[in-house]
Structure formats: structure tokens, C-alpha cells
Length: 536
Image (tube, rainbow, N blue to C red; front, side, top):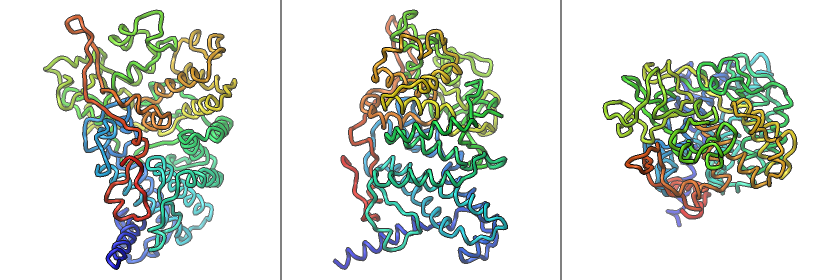
């Protein structure tokens, strides 16, 4: 019994270190400072704490384990080629409670939450001339904390929930049930949003303002099936009049993004440092730095609508096989803006994935095993940039998501009103679909059942946000992961000896209990308040 008590004490101390460790998060101004008070003493320290906390949540631009676009590698949209990035194992189901990735992500979140609790609890310490500045920075820190908790409970379900720095007693308390935690998080997020500035900041525009935190809360309301809340928040953002769809879908992910009013949450060099999307997504072109770390799959390619807004197997103009063999044939323009592959042009040259002398030959290490690459965030002018570095800004949450969230929420409530249809039409019209056929107010859509509307909005989301890190959450919340991840990951399709052949990358598996992640066995040892998720 005494040994068990010693173990629990050790576990609690370990948790306290997770929740309060903050010794290496940024350089101290005064290297002789020995107490928190000495470090945290003026407005500049408060600003640096906020900046450091954004580096936590966005992570280093070189860390593929936490980059938002890499999330598609966990889904049926894409393949992540490096096992150590964790996405590949989650997609193919080759994991259990001893898989290192789950320890990494859980500990990372707990460390960041521990720091935020300390920063927020001591936000009264720094001297500021204007108290409004203190309240703004404190609100941003509180918003970041809510974001971490949203992500944690979405992945693991029941997790520890603390809004104060941990002590020996609180560090070993049982986890909070997911529903109870969400019941606290959603109103808390709205209360924080109401205290944040309404306008986007002139500088540091990545920081939360009222609408960007509302939009993030809207996203998680949709994920967790709180459709009334998701629809209301989406409507409030629309009614603000501050956002609109950018005229060019392609430009949003290239250097033409500047000045657009579509980005609601921003990620730029100020909050994440150097960005490497060309390295991660781009082709190994000549001597360039592209590594094809994340590449699209055939399943995503085949999901794109025809120009008329039809699935490829329900188009009277061409057969499904014709579309499979020629993905650009009569296709939704978002395809060409998002994906490139065999036969397409990059940097003035035609891609040939079957040419053994080409660096883009599909069997080469740094080439795409699927024969496709994402065009999003891959700019020709970055082809020979040192290290695959890009200067483009990422839109972490776009106004298009607000529109499609409102539409989906109303569909799930079986209340497809005129605004819901207009939201879908706005997205389709900007994409360049033939609206004489794709306009969802046309008579042919009048008899749509709820199931047909659900199928339409799910396809629309997949196409609009391909490569933007939303698909994995979508297939989990829709409970379709068992359908889409229990089949092989396939690539480019062609005719060989009269037969249709697709490149095969790997087999995949998804079990019913995989909708929640396991707690790593080491985590279970040091946190006696946790209960392992079923199936692990």
C-alpha cells in the first residue's frame, strides 16, 4: 500500500510538471531572473507570452506532425509518406496504445495548457499603461486555452479539465466526461469572444478577435453535432458583413491571396515562423526541395464534381471510367486549383510519373507514390526556394467554411431554408461550376430528401477544403471512417494491356473503437485519473 501511495505521489508530481513546466518556452530578457514575477513584469513580457502561446498552437512550420494540412494524411484524402509524422499510422490503422504518436500529441497539449493556466492566472502581474491591453491579451490566451481543450476532447473524449495551475490534489483528479466538458467549453468560448475586439488587428492579425473565435467555436459545434449553435454562430458571422468569398479560388492558396476578405483565421510567419508547404507538398522537380510528404489519393480525385455539379458516375456526358482516366475532363475547376498529376503542367513542363529518368517517377523516394500532388500551397515560384520555404499566408479558417457550416447545420436539422441553399450556391458559383445545372434552387433539387442533401453537402465540403486538414474530423463525426478507411489507398489510374490499373500504395484498416484515440500506456501510468478508451 505504501508503495502504491508513493507511485500516486510520483504520478501527481509528473502531472504538475506537465501542467506547469514553462522554463524553456522563450528567452528571458533578464537571464538572472529566478522567479516568475521577475520574468513577467511589463507589457512586452505579456505580448511575448501571447506570441509564444501562438507558436505552441500553430507549432513550428517545420514540424509536420502538427501542421494543419498534414491532417489530411490521416484520412481518405491523402497519403503521408513518413511514418514518424504519425499521420500514416493513423490512416492505415497500424497503431495501439503503445504508439508513440499518441503520447507525443497528448503531452504536447498538456504542456501547452499548463503554461496557459500559469500565464492567465498571473496576467495581473505585468505593468501596462492601458488596462484594455491587458484584457485583450488575457482574452487571447483564454481563447487559445479553449482551442486546446476542444482539440483534446475531440480526439480522446474524457480528459482532465483545469482552468488554474495544477497542484498535487488537482493533478490526480478524474477526467471530465466529454459532454460535461463541452457543455462548459461552448458557453465559455462565446463569453471570451464577446470580450475580444470586433475588428481584425492591423498587425498580428493571426490573433483571435471576436469573429475568429466565434468561427472556431462554430467549427467544433458542428463537429460535436450541436447544429443549432453552429448555425447561429455562422449566421452571426455572415451578418457581421466583414467577410466575403475571394473572387479566385486558386489565388487563395498562391501569392494572389493578398487583400482577400475570406481568411478569418490566419497563419503567417509572425505566428509560426518559416513555412515549408512546398517542401511538404510539392514535387521533387529538377533540383528543387519538394519532398512529396503528403500526396492526394485517387479517392479524392474521383470525388470532384463534374462541371455541372454531378458525381462522375452520374454524368450523362462521359462514363465514370473516362473521368478516372482523365481527371480534368469536364471537371469542377477546383480540381485544377487543388491537385496536379500525370499529364499536367508544372513550371512549364509536363509531368510524367512513369518516366524512370524523371525525379517525379512514382517509384522514387521523393516522388509521389500516388502520382498526384496538391496544388494548394504549392507555388511555381517556390520551386527552387532554399529548403522549400514559402512566403504565402495560410487561411486556417475561411469564410467558405462559415457558409457550408450554416448549410450543413440546417440540413442536419432538416430545415433547408433559402439561406442554406444560397450558401451552397455562393461556394459553387465562386468555384466556377455551371450554375445552369449546379444551382441548388433549381426544380430538380426541390424533391431532395434529407439523405440526398447530406450527401451533397458532404461532397461539397470535401472538394472545397481538400488539403486543408478538415477531412479527418469530417469522416469521424459523420461516422463513415469505417467505410472509407477499410480499403486500400490507391493512386493514378491508366490502361495497361487493355485493363484499368491503379497505383496501389498501402492497405488500410479502421476499427469501430478508432473513433477515439487511445491514451498512451505511459500516460496511463502517470495519470491515475484517466480511464483507457474502449477497445484499447
